[in-house]
Structure formats: C-alpha cells, structure tokens
Length: 201
Length: 201
Image 1 (cartoon, each protein chain N blue to C red):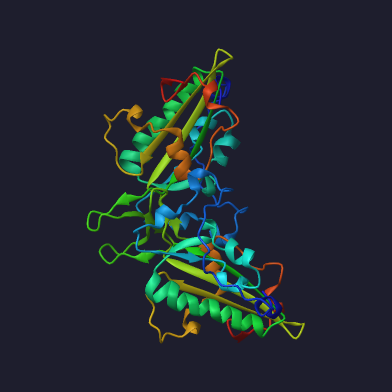
Image 2 (cartoon, helix red, strand yellow; image 1 turned 45 degrees about the vertical axis):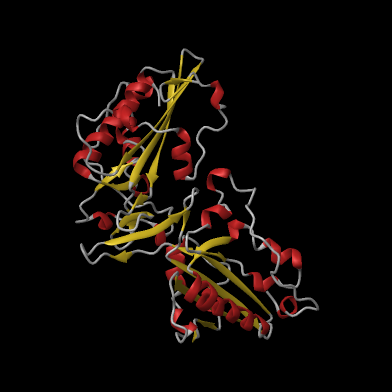
C-alpha cells in the first residue's frame, strides 16, 4: 500500500458491508457466516479493511470469508491486532510503498503434564473453521527510492495487554517462514536490506 | 500397482536400506532421522515399501523421509496399518490395476471439559515433525477391463485391536476429501463406479 492509496479523496467506511462466502473455494473447504455464530470469535480480517478505504468496492472485497479468520475479539482483533494494522498504515504513509503479508499460524506449545510439544487449536461451526493460535504480519517497505526495510510480527490469538508495545511481538523472519510454510520476499536478497526488525543488516 | 509389478521375478526386501532426508524439500520443512530419535514413534511409510519389491531401487526410494510420517509402532504401523497395506496388495493381485492414495490427517475431537472441538497433535524433534492423528488410504481398482470400484479407509494413529476388521475403518470418500483438503479420482465420475465402499453405486 502507499500514501496515495491510503489518503485519497475518498474515505469509505465499512458500514453496511456484510461478510460473504467465497464461491471460488470448493464447498468442502468454504467457511460460512453460520460457522462463526455463537462461537465467541470475531470474524477477523487478514487483509485489513482499513487499508482499502479509497474504494467502496475494495473495502467490501476484504469481507470475503476466505480473507477472514476466527479472532479473539476483545483484547486482540479490536485492540492489539488493530494497533498492528494501524502501525502498517503509519509505516506505509512514511514510505514509497509498503507490502504486507498476513496469515494464520498454528504453533506448538509444551504440555506441562507430559513435557511434550503439541499443536492444539479449536475448530468452529459445521465447516470446522480452524481457530489459529497466532497471526503473523511480514512488512517490507522502501524509502527514499532505495532503502529497503523489513519487519515480522507474530501475535497470539488471545487478549493482549493494552500497554504491551508492538515491538515486543517482533520475531526473526525465518520463525514465520518455518511456521507458515512460506518464504517471504525471497527475490529481495536479505543483504540488500537496510534493516530487518530494526537492526542494520 | 498391478499383479505383474507385485509378483515379478525378483522380490527384494528392505534389509540394509536406510531412511534418508529429502534434499528437494527446503531445509525449513525437511524432516531428519534425528527428529524420530527417542520420540517413541516409528518412521511409518505412506507409499508402502512392500508394494515395490520388484526393484531394489524402488524399495529404497520409499525410505525418503518425505514419504515417512510418525506412526505408533505396536498395534498400528506393525499391525493394523500393515494389514491394510497387505489388503491393498491382495486387491491389486485380483484386479487389472489398483491405485492407492495415502496420507496423514489431523482430525478434531471433542474436549470433554468444555465440549468444544479441537485438533490436537504432537510435534517431534528439532524440525517439529507433525504426528498425525489419523491416516487414510483411498483405493480405486479396475476388474474385467470395465468395472471400477473404490474404497476409503481412515485409521487412528493408535494401537488397534488385532481382531478389529479392516472394513470397520471404511468411511465415505468425502469424509477423507474434506479432512485431507484433496479431491480423489475426480475425473472418474462417481456414478461410473460399480461399487463404493462395497455398496453398489
């Protein structure tokens, strides 16, 4: 996203927009609004609605349920995660252009009773929509037409204290890559970055 | 697999063959023998070694760790799962050709304490190799040059009683498809099958 995209002449909001099923996903793996009903989870955006306010159609498209994941509402989706989304826009406004990759993670945790590592996550609704244990954002931006910077964040899908700084959720890029099964921005050699997670490369 | 492939002139066994890492998998997601060490799990085959005994090289190739998944040894890998593999070969010998798709599943179970559905599975070793909760096999075979039959099996990755019949693990094809995220043999319209899971179509 860019400064111009974020601060154009028009700023549409999300009022009146409804979440809708992604008909391009096979029905076996398509989530529905009913899956979230009484689950206790918000329908949380991956690509953020607030990044697309210049065009009502674009805002509406972010409400496709394949862009949505069950998120803890209070303390996460409406709070810490929202602050991270706002931080991305703040960064974008101070850059020549920013790219952000967002997704769910299913991270293992040690079980105290047997000392072993387990991945454990809830599934909700008739379609068994997975509730991620964590979410990530990997940001890359350019400034002054030549500097590249990169940051990676992982947040637990859980209430997070309001006074916890966003920086405390920074993790090495490869931590996200290993867990997500994805390589990010690999055509941009890491040694060409000015900084990664705030540290000079 | 076919009768000829199974019962050729040569029958090589697995003695002296060692499991090896799949160098074509990125190191972030590549499993190693060390991951299984002292985990309590067998290195269980997906494509079965016993299906490829006509050629020593083919048997050896099934030992690539990307074809291997952590399996409970006693009561599963060495018992019920082995019986299912033998059943596949039995079917193949009585057919014009048999195709089998095998893979891991991570199925949800209800937690008694809160009544919610969770997927929970162990991860082992430095590479966090996932221990599937279940495994599936989907079989399709042809007989008399015209009849098509199909069966699907799901077995828990757990000790299974010796006297439990293989048929009791049959499940509807779409149960596997929904859980695996795969559609099986979809170019063969289901109405063209003679039977699915032993029942006339």
